[in-house]
Length: 160
Image (cartoon, rainbow, N blue to C red; front, side):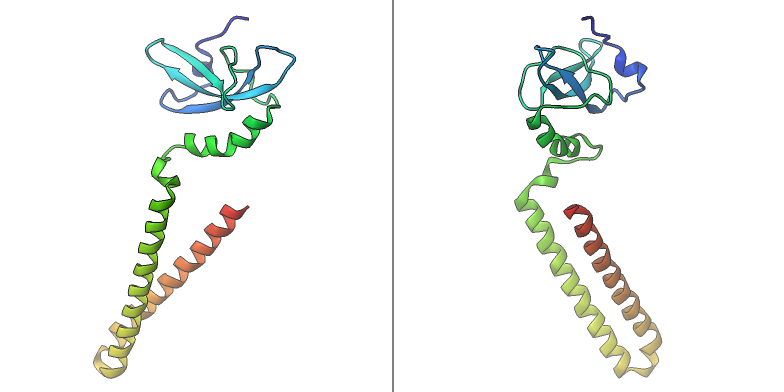
């Protein structure tokens, strides 16, 4: 089998990105795997690596739409899709960093809620400040409510 090292260019793929593509097994009657497909500038060629399950595979992707039959590749696909997505940062999956971000967000929400309470108190105590401070408190309160709605919506999306 000959491999077209320019196939990715013909498909209009971005040379700066990496893609998941189906690949054959050395035993063509066996499983179909997923491999990372990327541009290798030192060889001036598009190339596939081993299957994401770790299995060695012959060079070159199969056409898009070929069914992947290796259950290990299928199980790992979501993780690799996330890793290969534009803008992905390894820190996005660091549990300690995520915990710290969540704690910081919680503190910021509590601080903002305290600020809303303080502004409403000032508005109640100073008739001249009622409009400006009351509006500021209402805007911040609505913003926090919208943020909570957004967080709930994101949680629903992530649980699907």
